Length: 351
Image (cartoon, rainbow, N blue to C red; front, side, top):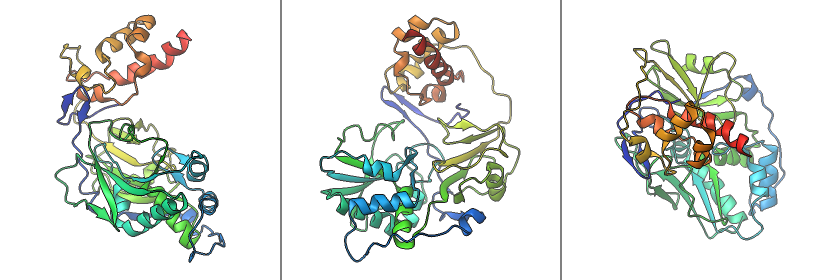
């Protein structure tokens, strides 16, 4: 559900989003631990760290530490174990936070850079990769924080493109490229050096209701209400969203919704007046914004008037739910929400 009206630029390849990452990005992440983290037991993997760690050893450590990769919600041990049998040539640390407000991948990277890069190098050595690099989003401007060109001799590669960038950034990379989130790499470093099990997630807390926007390292299972209380609210939110500004999930009950291993942001917004929905004005901006080359206006019409065959023929199944169309619509129609509902309903009916 898109509830924002930021300045955007449309094109046939998607849209450019204002990032609004400060002041959270420039401040070091802060701990917000419960007893589950403070009292968690460490483990001993028994491997000699003066020698190069093997792939099997890193997989075992990742499994003992229960590390979840925040970029896709998958267990890191499974990702490492299921890599193709052929040689991995490239290792990438994913710090692409391409949505407004969210900086929960690049913030830990910048403030724990040595640890993240060391974990990346361990994996590169174990997989005998030819190169490794760190991916960040190029289209970030007006930031108080300077993004370096390299960290510990590892290249910081500025990935260019329009939203949705993170889901498309690695399309030109083959199966010989292994991509891991920076938070997962930090957890791996802690697991190797300290025997720590992952009990926390790195989460951006922001929005126009939040008095102290910041990145927190939060104990998994902490209720959203407690996280927002920790950062302070200037007024009662109209919307609380978990995940991201564009594709996040609307939180209905903040007391009974908790931080999960792959939670990357909690955003609280206040709308001063009731948002009005207008009729489509036929401006075509949604068509220009769609990264899949679809016609969201026609798809929205087909779904809301229940014409499943026409919607499917217009490419309904190709919608990726990025919400670019809803974001840019001057009539504030929630195009993406209805199109995705139609996709769930109509595409299954056609099978």
